[in-house]
Image (tube, rainbow, N blue to C red; front, side):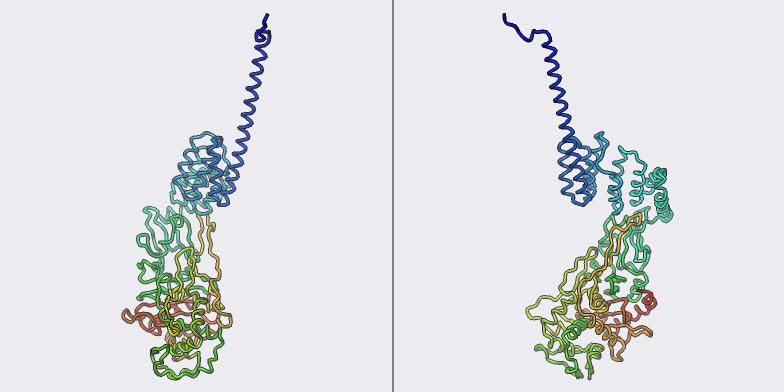
Length: 567
């Protein structure tokens, strides 16, 4: 008799128990696998978060994308990718990712919202903070969230929404002082209908936005030529981002110095630039006409003329040229040099020494000194003073002077500042600044700092050297030689002399006669220990000893007291 074991008593019960055990084991295995994947995903999310906070966006995105593909912690992956897009500045993609995250009910997050908010607000990125905050409010209820989101709306000048959020945040005792500060600023905006974004070096507002219609307002006429406008592609406005206009941008400009420069240059075309030699900060800039598509001070090239004699003289001092063997020199008629006649404006007669040669700006003296030194020495000295150097500027582009390429460079022309040399007003100022700063030229800058709505600095320019032109001893000698241009009875800068102020100049006249020669001048004041270096380029005004001296005199008369205050 064949017995079917399946018919034995208890078989079916044992079979059921075995199946149940298998199911339980499978469920436990599945749970363990899920937990392992969850832990792995958590690790990937945390790793991505660390990469993101260090600014390594590609590495962070790779981690978050891996998590998103596994679907276990997809909501968190969408949120993390959304934050990544905000930090990259891609608001549209961020909003789409946050929308995907919001459709899922999981409420945990690998990110603490306060550091993320801080990363946006501390850098003045209120649009990103707004997008992130509105997403968080869909599933989080912390009262603190309202403060951060309120700051974002206040920064964006959406005052009603900001006030509504601050009223909620004010329930948190630890936030009340910060809420009060934000509400005071909000009320000030309401009362004045203005939000200022551009400030001078002392923190006085220069320009802002009228909140009711978004139009720009300029507060002081003297800044008009450097600011430009919303409608024209000129001035500082061209280089400000939309984010800058929600924050506080501090320029290096000194209002008193700017006003003096503006008044002194009224009625002229070209540019006037003032720089602090010890730091490179641009204290004043006047561009005329202000509507020029280029920034005249920083970008327009001119033939430099006799201001280049300072560089020829620097090369002579470094080479220890024996001036006693050259002087006295009788400047009476043109000399044939390099196969052509070289002229002076006037016959200077007897030029007793190098001091007088510089004072009267004798072309024949400096042409011969240049030939004595040679082409390579003069070209090398020019490059030591910044010629042919490329300057990386984080704000407005700055062009430095160039030695234009030619088959045969004229040593005479290099020595007295004629073609193939060309220079910008800012570079001319830097040559004077290097002489006034013991031979070291500091990198010029106009943008000083950026602060957010909570007055925290999130970008700042530090003073740093650009090049070392000459030794301290040579620079000091050059400074005192520049005073001869003013003090010598025959000096080309004598008409600028001011009682009680010792300063130095070097004049130059260059350009095309058909268009009218340009009056060019560089200067240092006071001497010793110059507080300012300046350059004047007055287009079509002829000899610098006339128009250049008149502008200089007016400028220094206006800032004479300010110079005493400057450290």
